[in-house]
Length: 306
Image (tube, one colour):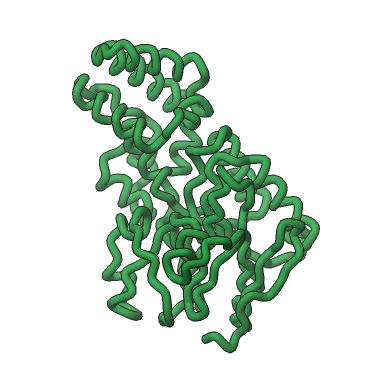
């Protein structure tokens, strides 16, 4: 069985579709195929069609039941917060699948009773997370984004809070299923050989990393460890070229970067490069391949690295 891994699609639906066409050519969508696809978070922001990416991934999960795993990224966690979704403790419970159905339904309801100060705080968070307003445009529409921008430009906090609150209510109403899907995303996937996680894990505790790693580290940490670990760690969040430059001084990497030991960085800064690096993990033998720009596999790490 092979596991295909991608990360940080960031609203770039065309780039995702191009990669899925490569997977189709490799037989991933054949009825007898048992290969897995792991999407390691950050489906939204930065690119033009975050909603389209989310809906495409949801459709993929339906098309290939049990073979597509979508993980939480920091941008999904931030959107749930700026939209005004469930409190943090409910989001954490949802990630673990511990909420009963009636409570999980709350994840689709915006907390519209907040004060102007609370709504403004969420607006400031949105401005930092969704630079350029691309996700707001994608999820709420051009008119909603224009109303918010006009109010912000007028330096009218009350008007801005009202416009932002209306936009969040529209997202909650029109995209309830998509928001519930985000709220159910798990922070990591562990297999016999690998851990797939958006940002990374606390490796200082070795095999006890699951107990030692806080959720924030999994979603938004900027540590980029290298060297041997008890599992192979596959993550995004920090562009692979940036990691490579920091470690080796060579930032010319255009795909997956492997540290020569146990770490594979797969964020291709897709919103800017329109490259969507794809790692292929051979779960049985421990080999790792990468799909090139035309979808052709090439080996980058053999089982001997373990």
